[in-house]
Length: 503
Image (cartoon, rainbow, N blue to C red; front, side, top):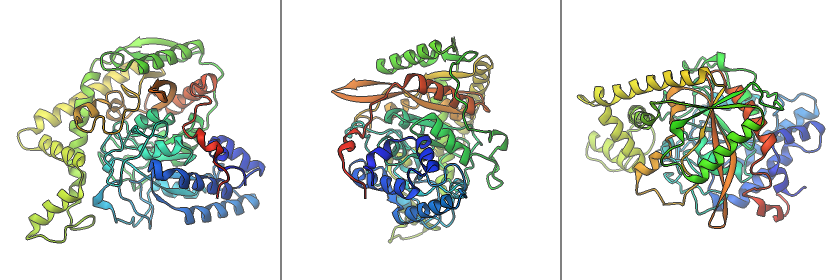
């Protein structure tokens, strides 16, 4: 068998071509990734559960179909991994929380049904901030996930395990969820592509809810073209999710343009001011210059209400979390204390012991925002700010095909660096939450790197588009990648090239 790191370095486009030509098998690819997981997960802690046996069985079935000339889809046989808040029947779904440490899903999410219908083996479930509340993956009840570029740093969050797994060659691609940047920020920190589709593009049935008006499932992948392939599998109307929108399920197979002639890219001036780290500023400005060199028209624009987005987001998301997490009460399912005097004590102690600090903080914030006498002052004003943002983004995008911004104000920071300052941690979501508040699609794309203490760290840029504009965003991102390849030759798992044979 070929050395597993080489297979794990290939893009999904390359792997599917090899499968089609008969140069490899799904079993070989899946074994390679399982070997990569075994070699690295003890350090990175990206996976909470690995489905080795089922994944190999699914791979064998895929190989039989290909031999018979009957693949279920072009991606039949390409393995995928899932953030651990997506239900897979018969497997644990912990949401990174002690509250659900032993919860076994009774049914599968719609996206899982779609993956299986397309023939993709599922490698396992990925680490995350508890109930998707966090920006560093330090809030997981099952230990921190580490950034493969520098294991002393965070991978971002809440989909930190997904970003780390793709970056480290432990999954070809993965599905995460994005409520305020939880796909895009870790994608930027780990040097991969992250896609937050427009709200309603992908069914949320079987996704454990954080904030139902903001949550959206999306892919993390090595390239925009790989992400587009996975979008083509999971997008679509679902009668079990009343918010899903079939009109957004377009053809995501990309025709990557040679130039960007005729494309206008706007740069909101509010995204390039105080608080933005200089390496991030320079990387995004350089990317703007590269887009311009490819023929795009790059213009300055403005979204005046952007400074209010973060406050509105934390009021609204926390209010919805307070409501959604009320079901975890120690009675129906989830963690339950053994000793209690009465029903009130059962509720209180089960939630006190089952939830982590950040989840409790947001539940209390959301409960306060919805409480009598304060709902108009906080929740209603946040909704008004949300509507104003929708209007202003619509105006900005009326003359632009995409808006270019940083993904996060910084690159990946040290583990523990911000855990004692929640407000500083929250500021990291400044540029990502508007896409969730407005329901617009956004893509995080690697656009450069910086050197910190002798370590190379990636930097990402964000492209945001009109509600029906995700395919165009991915085409722009793919064209940029092909032309520029800012991190070409730089891989966090480079040391594995000398790692020997896979299992």
